[in-house]
Length: 239
Image (cartoon, rainbow, N blue to C red; front, side):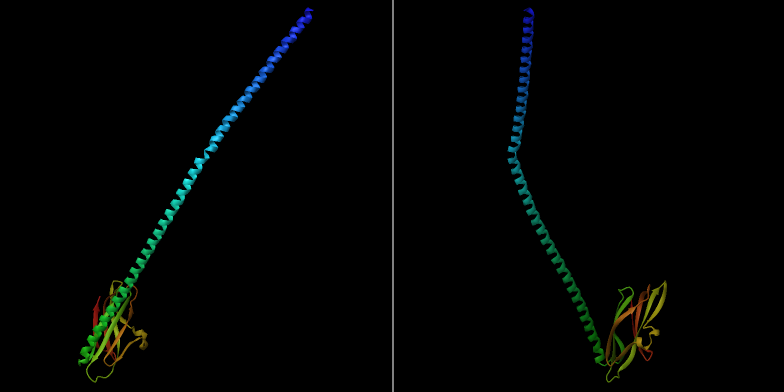
């Protein structure tokens, strides 16, 4: 009987221990579940807060879009104003350039009229009967380094004078290679075809360009009127 009683107590003790372990496991499972539920609730709360916070973000995005659109509009307006200013400036420059061209043309025309006036004034002595061949006007421009442009008026005065037939010749004194050199235009090698021929009764006006050799610096230019190779008159210009 004692053995049976002891065995019964042992079994009862084991059952009690097993029951306690079962309750502990159950309690731990409950605690774990509660912890998971609490974590899930917290996460959901945070997520809900994040989602609910998208409304201010949308408002900020809308404001940013409006600011960008406003800045784009201001940029386009400034660009249009700048383009308009550039156009006005280009028009002003074109107008100034056109006016400068017109002034140059008027100046050249005025100088031409002055020369024509001087030309006709020089004709008066011939009309009054001053006899002989003479140079009424002679001008030369050596502003171009190797070219000299000339204009000359040759006249003959007197009544019932025969036609004059001769030629125009130029001699230029130049500094070349440190030496003074005399050049003749046209050159003799050009022959009869290259001569500057004169043929008139009362006057003849001529103009042209003389080309200097490389490195030559002109000092004086003399216009000479020849009649059958003989010098009739001359006039010089110093530079």
